[in-house]
Amino acid sequence: MFSIQEFIRILSIEHNVIQMQTRDLTQADTLIQPQPGGNCMNWVLGHLLDNQITVLELLGGESSISQSELAAYRRESARLTADGPGVLPLEQLLAHHSTIHELLVARLGEMDEAAFAREIQHGDRTVTLGWRLLFLNFHHTYHLGQLELLRQLAGRTEKMI
Image (tube, rainbow, N blue to C red; front, side):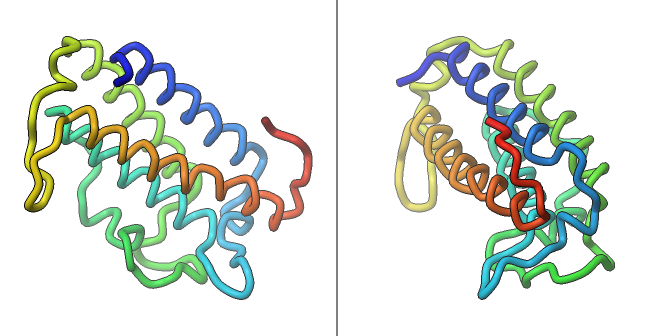
């Protein structure tokens, strides 16, 4: 299992990737739809944020972002095809990412290594907190990798990482 400091380092790298992949993009850029299917960068960014809030809550932290604010970004939500109600502006999504990242790092800094070995319920299974965090981080990196392709759809083909 990874340590708390290693997890903080991973979260920081991932946060930096989000910043790099969104650099110089506009709201319109983040709403470009991949063809023939999939979802736009705006949805991916909101979904990543929702995932990180889940991590924060598993760690016992509290989010300043309401669940209703992220309804459009949940698993199996409708594709985002244009700006409208429930679609967050890019600047707000990025500000929320920074806020949640800071809360995650602070919360992890308050924990000891034994916390990752604590057993929790996940559905009908008992798993360790560390295993659940590792799975959520896998999910996070799965979607994080989509940002590069979505950036390229917006015409930004320079190498970012």
